Amino acid sequence: MKAALSISPQWLNPRDSVTLSCEVDKTSTGWRFSWYRTVSYRAGLPSLSDKSYSLQPLSDNGTTADSYTLLPAGPTPTGGYVCRAGRGDPVYDTLYSEPQFLWSGDLQPSVSLRISPNTTQHFTSKSLSLSCEEKGNSTGWRLMSYREKRVKSGCARWESITESTCTITTLNRWYSGVFWCESGSGEYSNAVNITVHDGDVILESPVHPVTEGDSVTLTCTFRYQETNPNPKTDFYKDGVLIKNETTGEMTILTVSKSDERFYKCKCAPGESTESWVVIH
Image (cartoon, rainbow, N blue to C red; front, side, top):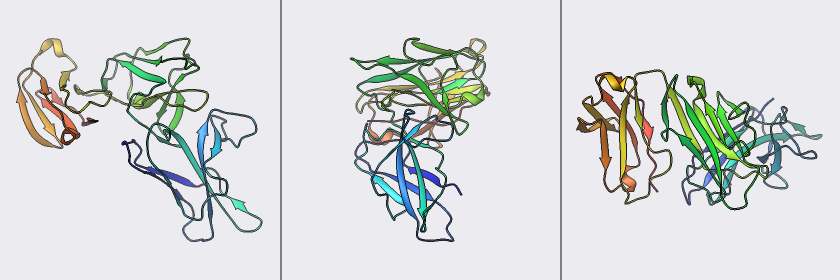
């Protein structure tokens, strides 16, 4: 039997609590739950079967409750989490759950993930570059991603910060997922949720959170822009039409928390998917 972990919310908001929930066979009782944070593989610690991560216990004795609260949320809790449950005497333990991840889009003091082009939506067949930019004396960072429900090295031939940039020359839809930089000691950079589209229209929106009071520009981009450089564009917020533009761009001059919503655009060639714009 295998436990199943869920995290709510999976993207951190400052000062919010985060709840881990562990699900096992609902027809039986008497379970005791153990909670773990993933760290780089180390001999002597329990590990996932593929040895991609070792597991650091969050508490010494586990809990009788099937949920565990991380409070307050902030830079420290970002990373991967695993649970399992045990019952009986002698104790029968379930298999470890698949790791689930808690991410933050906020820039971190040790390292930041930078991407080019600097947007969350991308076209198939285009290129994308990602790099871990160190700050201070931080070392040993590598690019990671969570795609197709699996943890993967972000670039097959790029395993350390000494090779500073990973370039994906031809994007495909299976590159959609969350990318981040991770250190050997288990620190995480900001995370970026990348989506790759095979349609004709994407919405270019900020990769990093926008500061309240700043301006932000959303751009509707057509795959074959050179043939129709400025199509008439409709912009939507939470599915409601908010603006018509002839330039393909919409600027919010002074953003506030109320502007933290889903946005998309529509023009003659087609319609983008939605992107969430984060305001801090």
